[in-house]
Length: 132
Image 1 (cartoon, rainbow, N blue to C red):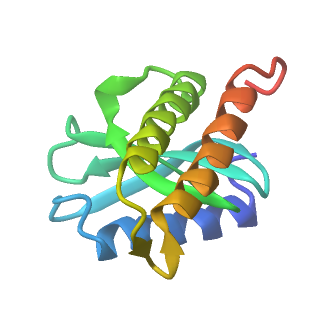
Image 2: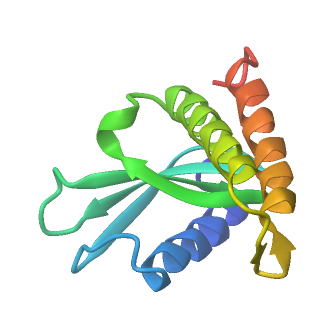
């Protein structure tokens, strides 16, 4: 259910996170939940409130990284989840090839294991029938 209290609270925190990190450059942002697996994963759209054709997908949730992608990368939430599974798996490979340095008190190799777990979970989710 995209109008649940969890969805509303999670959307607000995810939007605030990407704004704080300056990952979108819109002067004003509109956001709406498109799909969720209650208490776990949320997929939303972030739109430029002035130029509504300018928008991003937003994904995040519990024990899941917050990430954005241009609206053109997927036409459905299911495609978007599969896109992030692949994108994050590529990130895992890049982290594994990097020198093992500390990032936020974790080594890049520890981060790669965390990211791999998230990527694999998203892939399984994208292949699960009956939830889309």
